[in-house]
Length: 561
Image (cartoon, rainbow, N blue to C red; front, side):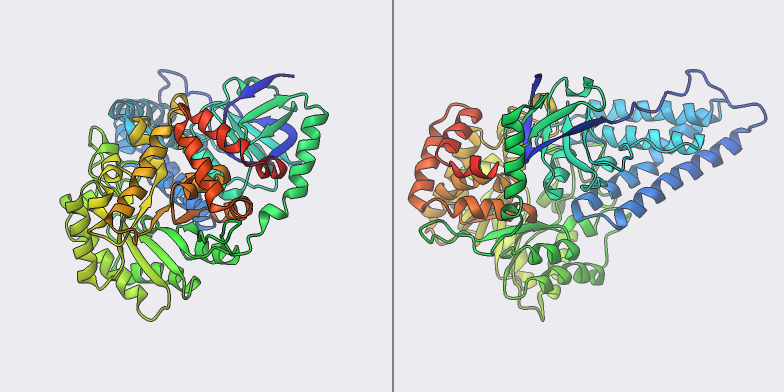
């Protein structure tokens, strides 16, 4: 038996045979010139047609995808027609270079620029390489690279997966995901959670296993093992038996002693919201409004925004819906709002800060949210991302008030917001911890990078201390202003218990995680959760914090979580 330890990002115990992602498309030969009889003009037209064909294919796939997948595919589609890429390729074609080689070299230059910029811009390099391969495939008239086709279910293994691939997985065929690279907040991880697929990332060496190898994947423990034995097979059978328990949420988030912890859903639009409501979500803890802004050269109109938001409000009549204002910038650039040339966009003008460089967009969005709320019974709350100071919180609250929105709040993603939460909460009605960004900013670790996966872990004691400080600030301010969590940490049943023990009032997650979190919370009292949280806070490493918490939660092993 060979073991490949990684980072578990989506629970599940599965045994199956693997299929490796196929090798990347072969490079067009260096120095390849235009074929005899093909003019530069004809090659240019062919390149432009191929780029449009790729963009069209990606948009078609986006149209039928979930919100998370839709955003990924739309961002990749934008890259397919990126003027910088296409113009650079055309310039090479005019020197006699073949269209395939021209786009290949042009993409190399764009990737080098993005990597040098670092941070979130470096993440876009994967999109460029994916688009490049698709354009070359279109020029050659061959199928685009992607997930292997199969009539039999398999475990997909890769060095890493391109965003456009992870966004269109068929969970009836691909039964688990394993990557040698990537991080806990990579596209692979996020899509795996939304599809409910067991997944492990950053498992070095697993991409060397031959197709057809039978493996055991434990998405909670973060391990992959070849030649599974009786224990592994029993664990997989037990997981399958518990699948029905973990698939249905009764709509009542509560601890064993009756302490209420509303379990909410993270959604990207009306389609997501309808599914979340059907899954029993007690409201929406995060509506990602940027989905109606993506793939646009101009700001959406007032009516377009109203329609997008109202569909979500209508799905949750009488229940809380927390709307996050536009979180543009960094990995979500918008041509009419953000500056793609920023040297470090993760620390640049993103989220609430875009109102400084492009005033008016935020106020118009708030007006649309208020208009969408009229005539619905949803309890609409609104929060701004990337708030760093009490002054920013106060100004956002005043903008909400001017728009007629009564419940303003802030995202706590920046450590300064956690440390000064008492002052910030004097200005607003609530706070929601975005643990994905809070973790990467606290640990100074890009959340997409596999080599930094150990640092980029919400179990980090430093991150847990900032959660504690945020709640302490609320208590010091008067205690009546709730602190929730809407980051991926809320979807980890063990960590959910710790968060509740730290005083977090609500948990918001992908709808597929509701049942598992609800089942585990129901087995502990509030006092027990507080004791488990104390143990985690005293840990000196994320592994120790997680182990100490899990030791006190035997239900996790029983359910395969």
